[in-house]
Length: 382
Ligand SMILES: [Zn+2]
Image 1 (cartoon, rainbow, N blue to C red):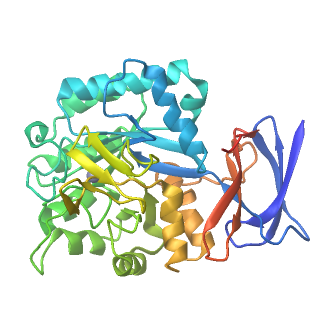
Image 2 (image 1 turned 90 degrees about the horizontal axis):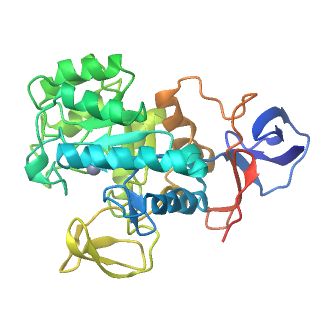
């Protein structure tokens, strides 16, 4: 059975017709007309998801299948693929967390289709307070290829990227080995010097993780690791656009510098998607989630305890504040992250899996999703 969808293209707003068959794109053509306020484009890709909706990829579950709820809850907000993100921990715990995702994917076909990679964030990051962020100090270490190779094997090829700091000796050699193995290397949680960052880029690092966060609160005017990453031509960058991690003017500057190399992640923690309340968090102890979506330490509203927004809320922050127009915002959460891993990725190509979103743009510029298709199947929205 074939399905026909009509709407405005997420790329340029031009009327488009998409024919789907057997869960895949069959044919895409321009249309003479389409409904005025229906936008169509690929589902969102979020390459940094620690958890969502009360569930956490960073804790061992008594029932692994419970983690499948993350995929289902993210589909509700248009995220059709995401990378479970495992942060700094003991080597054995990281192994166990990787195996948990592998097991989930074998038992749950939908989660299998939604989790398209694993992102390892740490433990080869900066030990320094500030750059290290909320990562456990005791498990931070220098890059260890044998260890990382073991994790890659345990992931059965699912590890697609690693966030590390090139401030450790031997970083360049480690990065080269990652690149040879098809792993995207991203710089983050770093206190590296300009020379170390330059060397990392030369070795093949291609991305900065949540640029502007995971930093000291005060840095030298120059040189510093922010200028070095902004200046590096070959570094793309992800940012958290939840309205709390970065002020709007910083996003404006990053956009001017990075252009089409700038994209979004949610970096959501387990409490994202939960009702406003005080909670006991695995990292950070007692925390408060406000109605506006700010997650902070219970006794210190100035200290963030992770991101509690999904990537659709990030898109809507950009749109509401007129930081980018709709086509660009959509690309920042779809083709840009996808093309980090597949340079030729085209969501409308024949045979591409039909992971699509239909949405309308509200008067305040934000996007309201009213249809999500995963492998061509309509997801019932709450
Ligand atoms: Zn981080």
